[in-house]
Image (cartoon, rainbow over all chains, first blue to last red):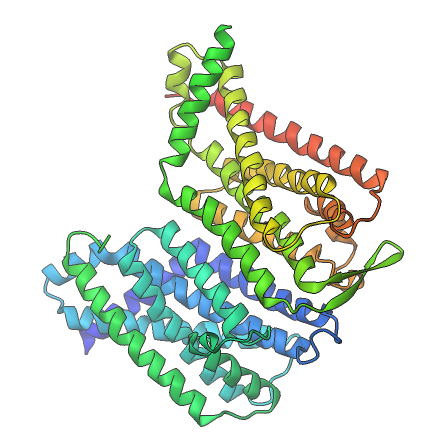
Length: 241
Length: 249
C-alpha cells in the first residue's frame, strides 16, 4: 500500500513539474472552452438550430479535459518507460507500478475536471455540478488510458501527441454529434456517450443510465488494452514499433 | 555559375534532412486529406448568406467550409515546415567550413520553404478540386499562398524561440484558431473583436473568401497583405541570418 502511495505521489508530482503542462492548464483550458463557446454561439441559428453556446461551452470543456488527460497518460508512459524498468529491477512489482500510474492519471483527471468546470462556469452555469464532474472525470480517465495506449504503441513524444490530437479532434467533431452526420459509425466513437451525458448534466442536471453504462464499458476496455500495452512496452527493450 | 551549383546541392541537402523525418511526409499528405474531407462531410449542404463587407453573398455551407479549410491546412503545414527548416540547422556551421556562404545557406533554406508552400497549396487545391471549385481560381490560389507564406515565416520565428514540442503545438493551434475561428466567415465579427485584424490570417482570408464567392478583390486588402508579408519576411530573414551567423560548431 505504501509502495502504491509513493508511486502515485511520484506520478502526480512529475506532471506538475513540466512547464508545458502548466502552460496548457493555464492557457489551454480557457482558450479551448472560450473557442468552442464563441464558435457555436456565432453559428447561424437557421443552419444549426440544435446548437447553442451552452452546448459549445460543455463540448469545449469535454475536449479540454480529455485532451489534457490524454496527454498526461501519453507523456507519462513515454518519459517513464525507462524509469519503470529500473523501478521494477529495484524491487517494485510491475502490478504496483501499473496501479500507481493509473491512479496517478485518475487523480490528475479529477483535478483537471474540477479546474475545467470552474473555468466553464465563467460562461455557462451547470444545472448539476456533481453529475457534470462525474462525467468529465470518467471521460478524462478514459482518454488517459487511450493516451497510455498510444504512448506504448508509438513511444515518441511528438508523433504520439499528434496522433492523440487528431484522434480527439475527430472524436469531438463527429462523435459528439455537434454536427449532424448521418452514419452509425460515429455512435461508437469514445466521446459519443460522454458528450450526451455531459450536455444533459449541464443543461438539465440529468444523467442517462444507459450512456453511463456505455462509458463504463469503454473505460474497462481501454483499461484492459492499455495495461496490456503498458506491460508489453515496459518489459521490452523498445516499444512495439 | 558556382552559386547555382551550391544552391542546388544545399537545397537537396536540406530537402533530405527535413524529409528524413517520416512524420513530416505523413503530415504533408495526411493533413490536407483529413481536414478538407472532414470539413466537407460535417457541414450540411444548405445555402447560407454570408456578409462580406456590405454585401450579402450566398453559398452552400459545405462548399464554403471546404474552401476556407484549404487556407487553414496550407497555413498549418507551411508553419510546421518553416519551424523545421530553422530547427534542423545543426549542420550549418560545418557547411560553412566546407565553403558555402551565409547567403547560399539562407537562400537554399528559403528555396526549400517556397517549394513546400507551393507543393502543399497545389496538393490541397487538388483535394478540394474533387469536392468543390471556387469562383475565381487565380485569386483563390493567391490568397492561399499569401496565408501559407505568412505562416511559414511565423514558423521560422517559432523555431527561433521555442523547442520542438511547444513549437509544434503553437504551429498546430495558432493557424487553426486564427483561420478557422477568428477569421471564419460564419463567426459574427462583433463577437471576436477588432484585434483579430492584426493576425496573419486576416487579409489572406479576405482574399480567399472574395475569390471563393466570385466577388471583386479590394485593392486595400491586397496592399495590406503584401505589406504584412514583407514585414514578416524581413523579420524572419533577419532571424535566419542571425542564426546562421552566430551558430558555432
